[in-house]
Length: 520
Image (cartoon, rainbow, N blue to C red):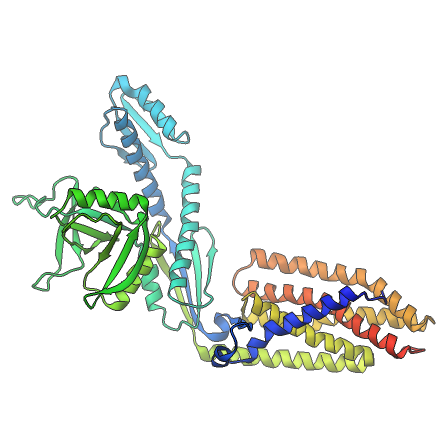
């Protein structure tokens, strides 16, 4: 253990220099970092919600909507499949998860086979000339799980595009999402963006599809409110065909821009959307079509000429921010179900600043007391341990910066705990060296035996703590994870500093001075 090969010395030096390199940006302000050369590391530790203030939102996904949508989609899919095989059906009767169709008696078995081929997971039963299709629990469960994962990803995209730095977005329970927005004191715009499903569709307009006598809209059509008001300033409506010409899912890109000095949203379709849009605009030249977003018509232009390039512009009474938000929503995609805000909390920056100051004081006090204790008790060896502790802190901050981890108040608690634990390994080694020295061993022999015998105990002790910290990170949320992150980094760097840095310093002293006895 006294022999320290050259490759280990080089590795130790490289790790220390990398830790110093990545931790340095934390000592500069944002303006100072901007003046530094581009090749220098500029990543700083991100402060969590409890340290810099911000907003906390608890969202809930309306999973009942997901189940209703699946039942409706299944009913449509069954009718379409059977119609393709020229099997006539009645309108579906939906009772809970069961969908019933009236089918000619001689077509029942053929219909049953077609539905089996379409989806073998559906449960089928026959009552006379009525075919019942029932959706199973596993199908509902899988559909809901997929919707939750999709919702989390879309929420992440929408928030990331607003420029919010280091948001925390994670699942809680079956249908809830926690969103933490550090530095955001007024989350009104974020809430507005998250509250919109952002499902966009394109339909043809037919304002004549309404009976002048009864005032009812003809079957296959629906009347929707338009975002554009008429000349009187009063809300206006349009009657649109329910059949979707092009779906918003076929959008490839959407950007806010200006046309004739007015904010608009330019959009571009993928290959499928381009073909469908071109076919629709060729067929309906001179007619009006509607762009519908979340059940409201946001624009209803007239098709002047066929649009074959797959690009178009959405115009309306937009402000610049409206156009930016709409393009953001369209890029991020549609939520599979509405989100409800269950809880909202705001942490003021003043409270966060107090937390930072309290954490700094606790860390510095713990750090100072440990340095003094080690120097008094273990003398020269204690000073080497103190140097290793300084390097240890540098490595922790460097790792947090390089990985862009978020530091929370519990994370500071983890660092304070690490300061105490960081010298544990050195204490074990030094005590073992001291015992061997008192037995009459030479300094070289005592140090060699001390390191060799203490190493196993050090690994075992830190491994058990590492397993606990890892479980906290995997199963914990929010503050618990913040504590686990700093504790994991601290354990790894502590072992490295005890077995590499402190040992290197002791061996260099041992070889340069060749002492006859050890004062420890």
